[in-house]
Length: 479
Image 1 (cartoon, one colour):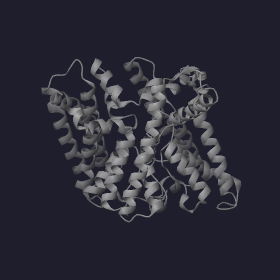
Image 2 (tube, rainbow, N blue to C red):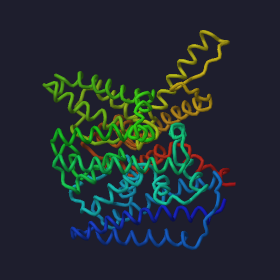
Image 3 (tube, rainbow, N blue to C red):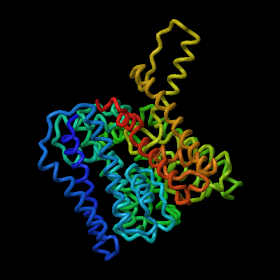
Image 4 (cartoon, one colour):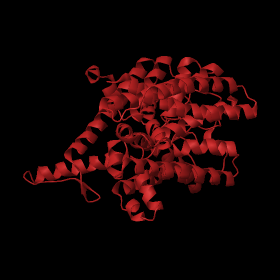
């Protein structure tokens, strides 16, 4: 394990953060707000610490898997650590625990917040908060590799540690071409949504911030009431469309833009993803009509937005889902656990694993009926290895177990069961809002301090898809 190599490539991640801290400080200076010095000091510290190993430690031609995982986890932890510094220096509601929670929530694109009054934050700090979403949306390592594309085999190794194995199944191009493709889609969606929100009447500042949060499926807003603040069907429609796109596999979106729409429309996972959102919206709208909203248009408007917001792990809100009937809330809990597709910026178990789960069940039923039959699970006419199915099923089991354990720990701290379970599921899935105290128009301020540390651990476990953190923590991994 070459510690100096790990430090070098983690330094690159700090330099990426320093760029966005500089932009945030510039916005703060332009507005003359109180966040300028916290942002510029943090920028200088991150730039100096990041540049020193980058300049004085020579690069490596190759790195081992162990070094790759060490770089991955260290990069996420240090990015979150430096991300909290401007919050702590600015003060307000940001204790050390609260600043860590907000920073981790930003980078992991969870979107949960401890802030009770978001609109008191200065513009520079609001932009930094949204920037953490955008940096973390496609993954910190992937973002760095996309803007610094000359790492060769080191870049390939880091890419493999960052990207979900399920996403890699869909990205069958060379690593550098894949990174370029991801960057084109990510930046392209960002530009298009910003322009669309401007046309709908949003200010440029709000449009950029909400776009960063949408494309990263994060959910941080500049307003206390989230998207409900605008009370605009046009704005809700634009954000809804881009949430759906951001929850799809970026590789398939790229192919569709290049003219190969069949690759997207014929994808079993993508069709399941869309179908689940449509069915969820229909069921919730039917349940809300008459019980919460008198008109069908209102029931569909608020039902569709909340289903897609939760189902893509974005977490924006246009209404208080705490007052919805239990049937509607349970459907939202399903989407909090599932979320969208691999190869997107979404969190959760992923639609891909749900499709694999169905195929595993189907395969087992056939084997019970025909014990000697040779059955292969296939997705889009491609046979899926048993190892992939086994890994996916094991992931689901571990995922649910962590949500249960986190809920148990929160209830031990005095949190009610609905808040505890939904907060654990929402942070593990990088969704943001849950129910109870942490509902769609609530926040996490009332969660006990130890509970916030538990939930930030869930955010990191969910964002790094569990195994990366586990490998990092195993003692024998370092030998």
